[in-house]
View 1 (cartoon, helix red, strand yellow):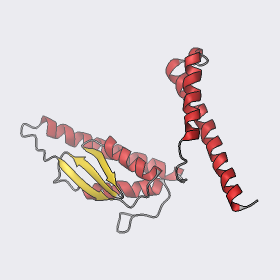
View 2 (tube, rainbow, N blue to C red; view 1 turned 135 degrees about the horizontal axis):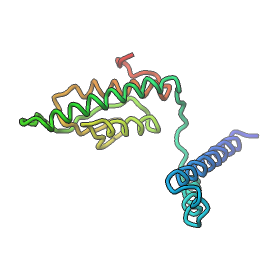
View 3 (cartoon, helix red, strand yellow; view 1 turned 180 degrees about the vertical axis):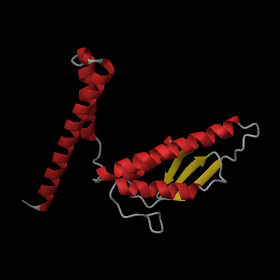
View 4 (cartoon, rainbow, N blue to C red; view 1 turned 90 degrees about the horizontal axis):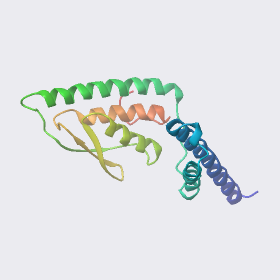
Length: 176
């Protein structure tokens, strides 16, 4: 079998796997949200099949590997950062002086386009006081509540944790 045929088969297998996973996850989500009694209703079947079929028309993403052993460390980091960010935002909101200096910060990421970068941008937006705004190439624009804070250091630290989860080489000069 030539390389072109092998590539087509692996893409078909990846699409079939993605279809099956989406079908199962959509059915599970419907079951959790609406209950097992409505799982076979025409609307449920249409929604579940629609979600799964739509994956056949979407381009395949880049393959990635996750480190399950790095997930607890990332979860602990995310919890610490969320609590610290929440306390900081609450302190600023409750202070009569409202010590804010909102603005935009540019950050050049080393993460490749794909799942890891998408995850990075989503986590930034989930952390209190920050919001991913735009990505142009590798230049990420982040809105922050206070530009005087060491945002670049925080983003580099987050990126380092994500490289561990997605099994990548750490950012040059980043935290180990």
